[in-house]
Length: 117
Image (tube, rainbow, N blue to C red; front, side, top):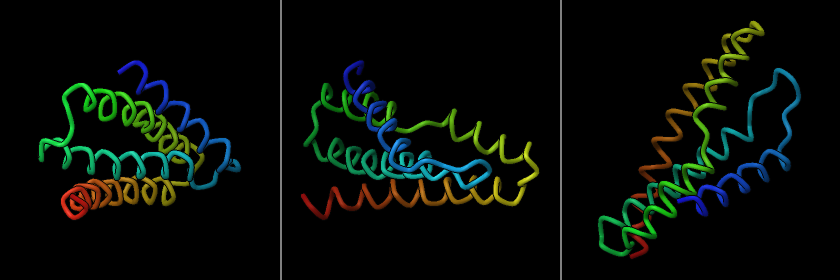
């Protein structure tokens, strides 16, 4: 899990470097990191349920990598910061978009794992 978490964190940092966010703008780096992590996690869950993913590799990738790549605390802080800056509508758009598309990505990844099997 340690190695997977480290690799996930490095990827998360890379997204933040590629997609910088101006002050008070929509937090795209966290949004994309969380969505990509959800898509991967959905696919990995599907693989695990089909018996195509060992417990060890599951911990490395699901708990480690996806846990290090996604970030609920940063998401929460960014939503809070938008609210504190008076950008209530943008904060709620960010929250709703993150939750809805995150669930959609989990579902899509899960379905892809069965389709590509």
